Length: 427
Image 1 (cartoon, rainbow, N blue to C red):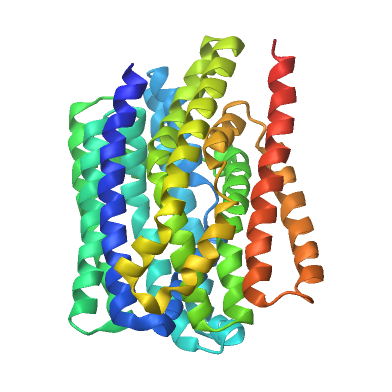
Image 2: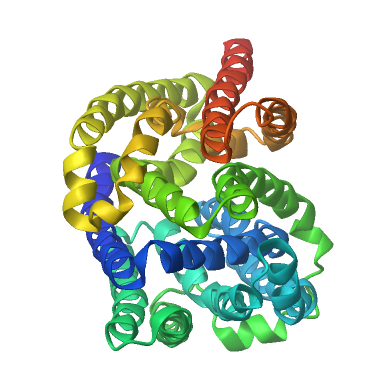
């Protein structure tokens, strides 16, 4: 019942997040136009590509590690985990992050013949570093099961990260306004996160003060948690790249308007995910606790959650597909009508997403991320190979859509076969 109550609280926060993102996308699309909106999509896609190399799994790793340490009331372990989080973040952004910021315009010129994309992507990459403070706060609140505080903090952060860029676009600053507005809002969330964290550090003896973390820098070696976090990073980054590569490939092969329409179609199909996000986040903490209770409890939690989420999502996604022509034309305008033609075939790639909601959490819980990575790598590589073949007969847009569908179906099938066999052995 507590899991259901926390899910409902997070659900309302997700609706707020969805509403703000939806409004922002409409304003951007209406004011920027289909071509410039495509450049906007490429800016964030390029920054996300860089993030694959600077994200070493610190966020997911500390969430799982903190959940275990907090359950044991191990104050020293919690302090070591937080210290590692800051230490590895400084190392990553001081090396790979710095190189990416310097070379971003050159790389975007090479890929898209437009250095401005890289210049503005620099600001988004810098914001990723500033987000480490807010990410730590949300992980801590999630572990402490302060779900109300978590929802409020994320809603405040989301509001400013949308309101400021949108305001600058409305004032006529265009793409630079979006990038600068996003960076400034993230810096503000960093200040907010530091103050809230200090509040909990004063009230909860298990939460280490920043001064204690700084003193602990020399004691904690990066190798202590690096292997665990790096495996989780590889798993997470490969999974995220399934959604990133289609935009990147189409940006190289087609026009910005095609990229814009694909972006709208993918964003529209992501709307039903608002019902799944809170469940996925809570499973990151719930499944490790279920494992402690026993293998039967773990299997029951995973199968029940997957079944309910999967059936519910089919109904919700079906409704969104039916009303797609009306909503897209109403909110984005006829300029983006081509997105409607993409939504229906792409719908095949997401219709069963609800059944896969707990896969990532289960892999982390049973510490079998390496098998998830192997499955994803095989599916991704085979998809690229198939794409090279059918792209000779298909235009870029249908070829990319076919790639998205291929990846979604075969990845889900591979993971379910492996996890089903693994859970059978636990009986």
